[in-house]
Length: 415
Image (cartoon, rainbow, N blue to C red; front, side, top):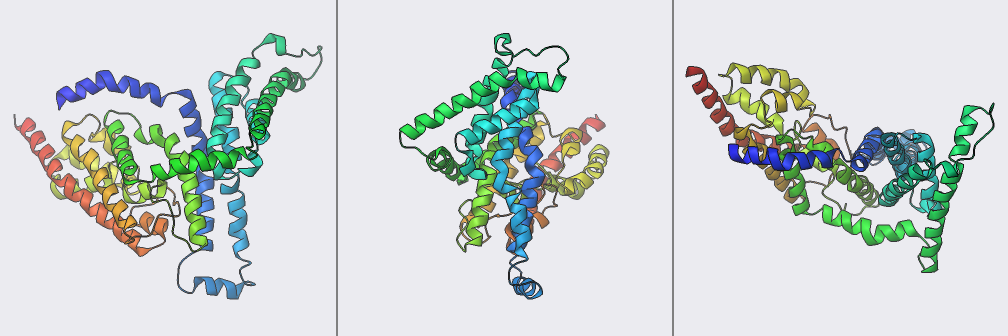
């Protein structure tokens, strides 16, 4: 195990660190972090509008005029999920421009204009998410290079306000970038593709979401995140750009399906992972905390770290455990830290696919305590039971490894 750790530290970690700090991925990740509160709000609005509590709908309809009370939730949805691609088109470009040391506002506006130039009006919700990201990256790369060209700067006379001079400096680069996207739109139209956004969604994004919702993709996600964390790399942040591009469309598609009385099509999404796999954080470390209370109290260091970790752990924050126990680069904890999420994702996936538990259709805040999160995500007590069962499984798997770790530490103290 030590040889493996040294090999990975020397060969794998440097490459993974470069990938994790790649400017385009960081820009996408940070953009989704900004929109996360809005996605949670939009999900809660839909949840309330479709709350499957017996008598709730009838009660609300009797208090208000028919279903007029749902107008609040519908309006909140229009301001969140319905314009997500528009926000992402701006935010990705803005964050990327900051990394290049260029004007983030001007770059974001150019990206936004470019997105609408190729038909963004037909894909302002999650349907246009992939295209919005692609447009943001390409428009930013073009704009930051053109804006640095002195030949494209319209110089204003002295005395002109700085804000006006700044806008004219970006005038020609902005016109060139937006015109190029207009040309792209015209070329697609010439080949019979009138709606680029929906055509891309049907050809690429929707099939990709379907592949990402399979059991094997869920198993891969459950493996990659703790594997990266073991080497001290923030696994959740590194795969977040990938997860979010499938997460928001999947949640919207599931919510729409439930509203229409259909079966939710996508099992694997962020609330599924948060509610049934990341119980206490990556690696289901709330199970580890409970296991230490059961069999690890003899070791003072374990006990102290555990007491410090239990509070944050209930709210799915596990950095104190990852770096305090530690789990990072701890050969004994490597096996359960990797195996537990894979077991939990398997149990959750097949429980959902067999219809024992409803599909996770709503996104509770990621700090929602386990079990409660399972109920909120599925709007069913079956979801809470599944989360509780998975938590017990995580404890059972962690117990022998905690006992092994404690025994080794006590032997070291005795020696």
